[in-house]
Length: 367
Image 1 (cartoon, rainbow, N blue to C red):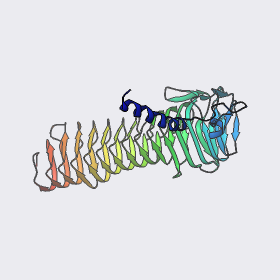
Image 2: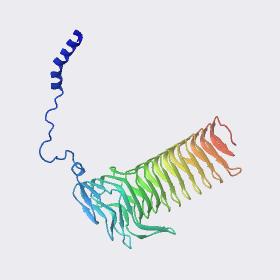
Image 3: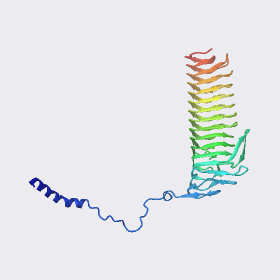
Image 4: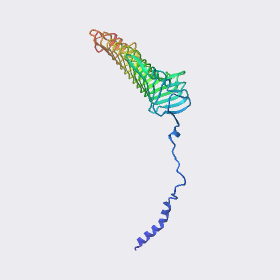
């Protein structure tokens, strides 16, 4: 054995006791008794009360959920009278078998701080020959007594009711989001704020509220598709004599009507409006980057200013009419008719003719 090998072995003998101390694991035997759970259950995290039958009245704060599809033979399904209540429809459906429409699927009575989400309301009302009739509920969601406050309706679909689809009044704290209403003899959705929602086949106004975003609505009668203070990225139409959209401010919107005005607003930007037999767009103050068309009415008419707008008609009416028109064009499909009229026109064109009192930098058209 060499001296190098001897001293190396001696060094390992010196280190090994320290290694055994460092790697010691202690007592690995499990403690006596049955192991207890260390995690909380869903019920402990969010205590919820099941709803397994209808009708039911909710008057105590808390979270409730449907356990299955539920139906009533008459009257209301769920009546909410308390505050601080969340109802999760849990993907299930509330329906009614009443032979004559009565009651409301979810009724709000003096409700405050309430959320209803994730489910369906189905009723048997249909539309035949312009008349709504059938079985089930009068309303999908409705309020009585005072207007509900701080109410949120999310991801709920309503179909086939004789009255209103979702009606929360126009309190500034009511919100309807990502909801649909199909076939409602009354209004589709009424709330202060409506977003990402769709309404079809209403016998009254499609969507009525303060702020409407990313939504669409259509009516089957002479009522308005969307009526609101402000509408953004929306579309509204009326299949009768109603207005497609009637709002204070419209931005990036599209509106049409069969025999009424397509879009009526105080101000409009980047909008399109059309009508078969009335004005495509009517603007009280300012229209910017708008396109209006009509078969027998005016394409665009404003008592204020029209900026970079285009109006067209195929009849003897005027394609575009404004007090001040800037960089606009009006077109009339009727030979010899006026395409554009204005008190003052700047860089505008009217075809086949134009009638402008004060002209600046005109780019074509007749006298």
